[in-house]
Image 1 (spheres, rainbow, N blue to C red):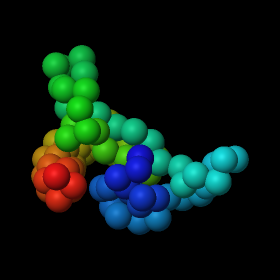
Image 2 (cartoon, one colour):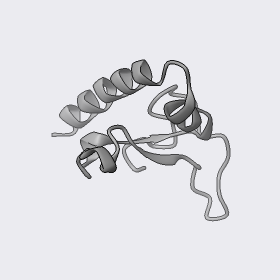
Image 3 (cartoon, rainbow, N blue to C red):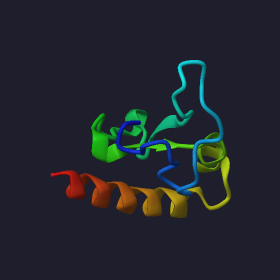
Length: 81
């Protein structure tokens, strides 16, 4: 969530609202699910808006979204090193 800085790491739009603690609301999404042996590591986790989160799980193009999101997060993590 800190890395996202209030913007969806998929669509790059601002979080849809702020919560009661004044924090931009984004949902944490494991790009490769833990149940499929995806790592519980920052390179496998994205902070995304609720719409993108639903699309990541139920969308027609969820596999393409997964690939694109994975590439974005890998690049973001490299930039932090």
